[in-house]
Amino acid sequence: MAEYAHPEVVVSTDWVSQHLSDPKIKIVESDEDVLLYEVGHIEGAVKIDWQTDLQDQVVRDYVDKARFEKLLSEKGISNDTTVVFYGDKNNWWACYAYWVFKLFGHEKALVMNGGRQKWVEEGRPLTKDVPGYPKTAYKVSSVDESIRAFRDDVTKHMSAKKPLIDVRSPKEFTGELLHMEAYPQEGALRGGHIPGAKNVPWATAVKEDGTFKSADDLKEIYMDGKGLKKGDDVIAYCRIGERSSHTWFVLTYLLGFDKVRNYDGSWTEWGNLVKAPIEKP
Amino acid sequence: MSRIEDIIGQFQGADYQETLAMLLDYSEALPPLPDEYRDARDAGFNRVPECETPVYIFIDVRDGKVRIHADVPEESPTVRGFVSLLVDAFEGVAPEEIESAPENLIHSLSLDRKLGTRRMFGLSAVYNRIRSEVRRAGGVN
Image (cartoon, rainbow over the protein chains, first blue to last red):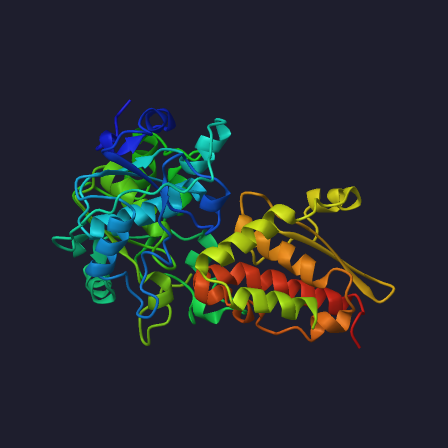
């Protein structure tokens, strides 16, 4: 059976339980549900929230370098710390946080396979104790925007007929689902997908227990099934760029693609852009 | 002062951590779904479809008072906490009290500002569902 392209970035729950007091390691929980960490978390884990910690609250963007440095310093993470991410929903938000850490050039980052669900199902302990770590002096040397696509990149990509992966649900892809009446800012004014995009819902990449599928299965889904090749220049998107960071992780680290970008503007940008081309069956 | 006004006051004065702590307390305090509603839940009735979390809400209006029963998984403490808050605010009140509660309760509780707007869609759907069910139960003229 084929191995993942970068097997070293995925660690097991066992591995994590054996490294709880390793000073070179920090465990980060990142969840969809903002309260889950408070309910109980892995001993020693710190919380990083995708919205309140990683996103700017005014401009639609991530926090700036200085705020990222401040956040990581307060969490006791140094530039050479190995950060292990885990979270709810098949590590959806853990992968999102992972992607943002990579955007800011953090080097050593791992994902705990199976996430919070697997840890809990295995009956492993959770604690409500919030750890305090000595403050560090984290420094971002450069921002790596090679893993991020903006709308103009997507337009060029689309015109060049390069592969685009839409990781939303089939109904969002066809445009059947688009409106969210109570919260129109959550939706888009138009439904459908970016012309030429192929639909592979993000959770296709995981098994029932929340762990990633095998390299062979992933190859069958993305490469044999959708015709992607390792050397392809790929852009993944969803609604707000979170589910697609999971697919970005899978393509980059598990299948070893060289150039995958996450379009974090995603459908809430594209589906609202005046005159943006849309394909709808 | 109505119970919901009282709760709004508490949330407005709370910082991020205090907000989380109150929601966590609420989440832990949600009463279990009474047995007589379990079959309906298991058959998939009364689910709030807009909420990604499987949330089931059962509303009755009896003798001029609203009865709310709900089921929300423990793995979704934010939604569970919010539903529990609504039960605390509206269980046993007259339907008119729910009708006159703020249209955008989430904003009044300042949950959108503290927890981020992108999490609020499901909560808003739950609240709207309760209000519309109360109206449908004939409680409001």
